[in-house]
Image 1 (cartoon, one colour):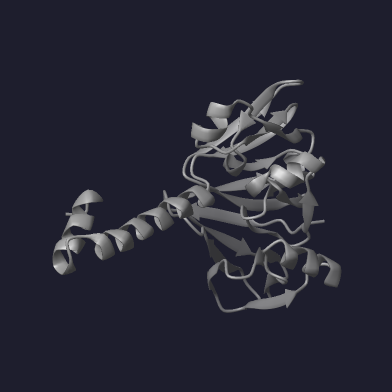
Image 2 (cartoon, one colour):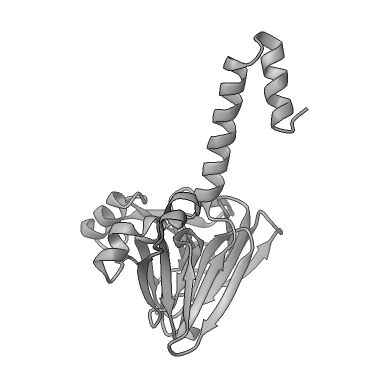
Length: 255
Protein backbone atom coordinates (compact mmCIF):
# COMPACT_ATOMS: atom_id res chain seq x y z
CA UNK A 1 0.00 0.00 0.00
CA UNK A 2 1.39 3.41 -1.02
CA UNK A 3 1.93 6.28 1.40
CA UNK A 4 -0.84 8.90 1.50
CA UNK A 5 0.86 12.17 0.57
CA UNK A 6 -0.16 15.81 0.18
CA UNK A 7 1.25 18.01 -2.58
CA UNK A 8 1.22 21.42 -4.23
CA UNK A 9 2.15 22.24 -7.83
CA UNK A 10 3.84 25.61 -8.42
CA UNK A 11 4.54 27.52 -11.62
CA UNK A 12 3.00 27.74 -15.06
CA UNK A 13 5.25 26.62 -17.92
CA UNK A 14 8.19 25.45 -15.78
CA UNK A 15 6.43 23.64 -12.95
CA UNK A 16 7.58 21.97 -9.77
CA UNK A 17 5.73 19.80 -7.27
CA UNK A 18 6.28 20.10 -3.53
CA UNK A 19 5.45 16.95 -1.55
CA UNK A 20 4.45 17.13 2.12
CA UNK A 21 5.46 14.02 4.06
CA UNK A 22 4.30 12.97 7.50
CA UNK A 23 6.82 11.13 9.70
CA UNK A 24 7.87 7.79 8.11
CA UNK A 25 6.25 8.69 4.76
CA UNK A 26 8.31 8.69 1.57
CA UNK A 27 8.36 9.57 -2.11
CA UNK A 28 10.24 7.76 -4.91
CA UNK A 29 11.88 9.57 -7.83
CA UNK A 30 14.36 9.15 -10.64
CA UNK A 31 17.86 10.37 -9.83
CA UNK A 32 18.36 14.05 -10.58
CA UNK A 33 14.74 15.24 -10.27
CA UNK A 34 14.97 16.64 -6.71
CA UNK A 35 15.11 20.44 -6.25
CA UNK A 36 15.24 20.83 -2.46
CA UNK A 37 14.38 19.01 0.74
CA UNK A 38 13.95 20.12 4.34
CA UNK A 39 15.73 18.87 7.45
CA UNK A 40 14.53 15.44 8.48
CA UNK A 41 14.27 14.14 4.91
CA UNK A 42 16.72 11.31 4.19
CA UNK A 43 17.71 9.90 0.80
CA UNK A 44 17.79 6.13 0.34
CA UNK A 45 19.05 5.02 -3.07
CA UNK A 46 18.46 1.47 -4.36
CA UNK A 47 17.70 -0.43 -7.54
CA UNK A 48 14.01 -0.19 -6.70
CA UNK A 49 13.25 -3.91 -6.80
CA UNK A 50 16.46 -5.85 -7.38
CA UNK A 51 19.32 -5.85 -9.87
CA UNK A 52 17.14 -7.03 -12.75
CA UNK A 53 14.90 -3.95 -12.56
CA UNK A 54 17.94 -1.73 -12.25
CA UNK A 55 19.53 -3.25 -15.36
CA UNK A 56 16.26 -2.96 -17.31
CA UNK A 57 16.14 0.76 -16.59
CA UNK A 58 19.80 1.20 -17.46
CA UNK A 59 19.58 -0.45 -20.90
CA UNK A 60 16.61 1.75 -21.78
CA UNK A 61 18.50 4.95 -20.95
CA UNK A 62 17.10 5.49 -17.46
CA UNK A 63 19.01 5.67 -14.18
CA UNK A 64 20.08 2.34 -12.67
CA UNK A 65 18.85 3.57 -9.28
CA UNK A 66 15.61 4.86 -7.78
CA UNK A 67 15.90 7.29 -4.86
CA UNK A 68 13.44 7.27 -1.96
CA UNK A 69 13.09 10.45 0.10
CA UNK A 70 11.93 9.40 3.57
CA UNK A 71 10.78 11.71 6.36
CA UNK A 72 12.69 10.51 9.43
CA UNK A 73 11.82 13.58 11.51
CA UNK A 74 9.17 14.13 14.15
CA UNK A 75 7.03 16.59 12.20
CA UNK A 76 5.98 17.22 8.63
CA UNK A 77 8.71 17.63 6.01
CA UNK A 78 8.79 18.81 2.43
CA UNK A 79 10.69 17.76 -0.67
CA UNK A 80 10.30 19.26 -4.16
CA UNK A 81 10.87 17.98 -7.69
CA UNK A 82 11.23 20.09 -10.82
CA UNK A 83 10.07 19.46 -14.36
CA UNK A 84 12.99 18.86 -16.77
CA UNK A 85 11.71 21.17 -19.56
CA UNK A 86 8.72 23.49 -20.25
CA UNK A 87 5.37 21.81 -19.79
CA UNK A 88 2.95 20.60 -17.12
CA UNK A 89 3.08 18.16 -14.21
CA UNK A 90 0.14 15.73 -14.14
CA UNK A 91 -0.88 14.27 -10.75
CA UNK A 92 -2.26 10.75 -11.12
CA UNK A 93 -4.23 9.05 -8.35
CA UNK A 94 -3.49 5.44 -9.32
CA UNK A 95 -6.38 4.18 -7.19
CA UNK A 96 -8.73 6.15 -9.48
CA UNK A 97 -7.30 4.81 -12.76
CA UNK A 98 -7.42 1.09 -11.99
CA UNK A 99 -4.15 0.80 -10.06
CA UNK A 100 -1.88 0.83 -13.13
CA UNK A 101 -0.82 3.51 -15.59
CA UNK A 102 1.65 3.35 -18.48
CA UNK A 103 3.74 6.37 -19.46
CA UNK A 104 6.61 7.38 -21.69
CA UNK A 105 9.98 6.51 -20.13
CA UNK A 106 10.92 10.22 -19.89
CA UNK A 107 7.56 11.29 -18.42
CA UNK A 108 7.86 9.82 -14.90
CA UNK A 109 8.81 12.37 -12.22
CA UNK A 110 8.02 10.87 -8.80
CA UNK A 111 5.52 8.66 -6.95
CA UNK A 112 4.42 7.89 -3.40
CA UNK A 113 6.51 5.30 -1.59
CA UNK A 114 4.96 1.88 -2.20
CA UNK A 115 4.43 2.49 -5.92
CA UNK A 116 6.05 -0.10 -8.18
CA UNK A 117 8.02 1.41 -11.08
CA UNK A 118 8.80 -1.00 -13.90
CA UNK A 119 9.59 -1.06 -17.62
CA UNK A 120 6.68 -2.02 -19.87
CA UNK A 121 7.56 -2.96 -23.43
CA UNK A 122 4.97 -2.56 -26.16
CA UNK A 123 2.80 -5.53 -27.10
CA UNK A 124 3.58 -5.87 -30.78
CA UNK A 125 6.83 -6.32 -32.69
CA UNK A 126 5.94 -3.45 -35.04
CA UNK A 127 5.53 -1.05 -32.16
CA UNK A 128 8.93 -2.01 -30.79
CA UNK A 129 10.71 -1.83 -34.13
CA UNK A 130 9.26 1.42 -35.44
CA UNK A 131 7.88 3.21 -32.41
CA UNK A 132 10.72 5.67 -31.84
CA UNK A 133 9.98 7.47 -28.58
CA UNK A 134 6.96 5.21 -28.04
CA UNK A 135 8.93 1.97 -27.82
CA UNK A 136 10.03 2.04 -24.20
CA UNK A 137 7.21 2.63 -21.73
CA UNK A 138 7.13 2.66 -17.93
CA UNK A 139 4.46 0.94 -15.85
CA UNK A 140 3.40 2.53 -12.56
CA UNK A 141 1.47 0.26 -10.22
CA UNK A 142 -0.03 1.11 -6.84
CA UNK A 143 -2.86 2.90 -5.05
CA UNK A 144 -1.26 6.28 -4.31
CA UNK A 145 -0.23 9.38 -6.22
CA UNK A 146 2.25 9.40 -9.09
CA UNK A 147 3.42 12.48 -10.99
CA UNK A 148 4.30 12.54 -14.67
CA UNK A 149 5.52 15.42 -16.85
CA UNK A 150 4.27 16.49 -20.28
CA UNK A 151 5.93 18.96 -22.65
CA UNK A 152 3.99 22.02 -23.78
CA UNK A 153 0.21 21.83 -23.46
CA UNK A 154 -1.51 18.73 -22.02
CA UNK A 155 -4.45 17.09 -23.78
CA UNK A 156 -6.58 14.61 -21.82
CA UNK A 157 -8.80 12.22 -23.77
CA UNK A 158 -11.20 9.48 -22.69
CA UNK A 159 -11.45 7.01 -25.54
CA UNK A 160 -14.66 5.01 -25.80
CA UNK A 161 -14.78 1.33 -26.74
CA UNK A 162 -13.32 0.90 -30.22
CA UNK A 163 -12.52 4.60 -30.65
CA UNK A 164 -9.21 5.11 -32.46
CA UNK A 165 -6.71 7.94 -32.37
CA UNK A 166 -3.58 8.22 -34.52
CA UNK A 167 -0.76 10.33 -33.09
CA UNK A 168 2.94 11.05 -33.46
CA UNK A 169 4.67 8.61 -31.12
CA UNK A 170 6.48 11.39 -29.27
CA UNK A 171 3.19 13.13 -28.43
CA UNK A 172 2.05 10.26 -26.21
CA UNK A 173 2.55 10.92 -22.49
CA UNK A 174 0.64 8.06 -20.92
CA UNK A 175 -2.30 5.71 -21.27
CA UNK A 176 -4.42 3.31 -19.27
CA UNK A 177 -3.52 -0.38 -19.73
CA UNK A 178 -6.97 -0.94 -21.29
CA UNK A 179 -5.92 1.16 -24.31
CA UNK A 180 -4.46 -0.90 -27.16
CA UNK A 181 -1.24 0.57 -28.56
CA UNK A 182 0.24 -0.21 -31.96
CA UNK A 183 2.35 1.38 -34.71
CA UNK A 184 0.88 1.79 -38.19
CA UNK A 185 2.62 2.60 -41.49
CA UNK A 186 1.39 5.88 -43.00
CA UNK A 187 1.78 4.77 -46.60
CA UNK A 188 2.24 6.81 -49.75
CA UNK A 189 5.49 7.97 -51.34
CA UNK A 190 4.74 11.70 -50.87
CA UNK A 191 3.81 11.16 -47.22
CA UNK A 192 7.09 9.35 -46.61
CA UNK A 193 9.18 11.91 -48.50
CA UNK A 194 7.52 15.22 -47.61
CA UNK A 195 5.26 14.55 -44.63
CA UNK A 196 7.83 15.57 -42.04
CA UNK A 197 6.31 13.35 -39.34
CA UNK A 198 8.12 10.09 -40.09
CA UNK A 199 6.82 6.92 -41.73
CA UNK A 200 4.86 5.59 -38.76
CA UNK A 201 2.16 6.79 -36.39
CA UNK A 202 0.97 5.34 -33.10
CA UNK A 203 -2.60 4.03 -33.16
CA UNK A 204 -4.48 4.06 -29.86
CA UNK A 205 -7.74 2.11 -29.54
CA UNK A 206 -10.07 2.58 -26.57
CA UNK A 207 -11.48 2.25 -24.08
CA UNK A 208 -9.40 4.20 -21.58
CA UNK A 209 -7.66 7.38 -20.50
CA UNK A 210 -4.93 8.93 -22.66
CA UNK A 211 -2.68 11.94 -22.03
CA UNK A 212 -1.00 13.72 -24.96
CA UNK A 213 1.60 16.52 -25.12
CA UNK A 214 2.02 19.27 -27.69
CA UNK A 215 5.82 19.54 -27.31
CA UNK A 216 7.72 16.24 -27.14
CA UNK A 217 11.25 16.72 -25.84
CA UNK A 218 12.66 15.04 -28.97
CA UNK A 219 10.98 17.71 -31.14
CA UNK A 220 12.33 20.51 -28.95
CA UNK A 221 15.82 19.01 -29.00
CA UNK A 222 15.74 18.63 -32.80
CA UNK A 223 14.87 22.32 -33.24
CA UNK A 224 17.64 23.41 -30.87
CA UNK A 225 20.22 21.22 -32.63
CA UNK A 226 19.10 22.46 -36.04
CA UNK A 227 19.37 26.10 -34.93
CA UNK A 228 22.80 25.52 -33.41
CA UNK A 229 24.00 23.78 -36.57
CA UNK A 230 22.66 26.59 -38.75
CA UNK A 231 24.41 29.19 -36.60
CA UNK A 232 27.75 27.37 -36.86
CA UNK A 233 27.38 26.96 -40.64
CA UNK A 234 26.42 30.61 -41.09
CA UNK A 235 29.45 31.80 -39.16
CA UNK A 236 31.85 29.57 -41.10
CA UNK A 237 30.42 30.14 -44.59
CA UNK A 238 29.29 33.74 -44.23
CA UNK A 239 31.03 36.83 -45.53
CA UNK A 240 33.89 36.24 -43.17
CA UNK A 241 34.53 37.22 -39.55
CA UNK A 242 32.01 39.61 -38.06
CA UNK A 243 30.04 39.93 -41.29
CA UNK A 244 29.31 36.21 -41.45
CA UNK A 245 28.22 36.16 -37.85
CA UNK A 246 25.92 39.17 -38.33
CA UNK A 247 24.39 37.65 -41.47
CA UNK A 248 23.76 34.37 -39.65
CA UNK A 249 22.02 36.23 -36.82
CA UNK A 250 19.86 38.20 -39.25
CA UNK A 251 18.74 35.07 -41.07
CA UNK A 252 17.74 33.53 -37.75
CA UNK A 253 15.91 36.62 -36.55
CA UNK A 254 18.43 37.40 -33.79
CA UNK A 255 19.44 40.81 -35.06
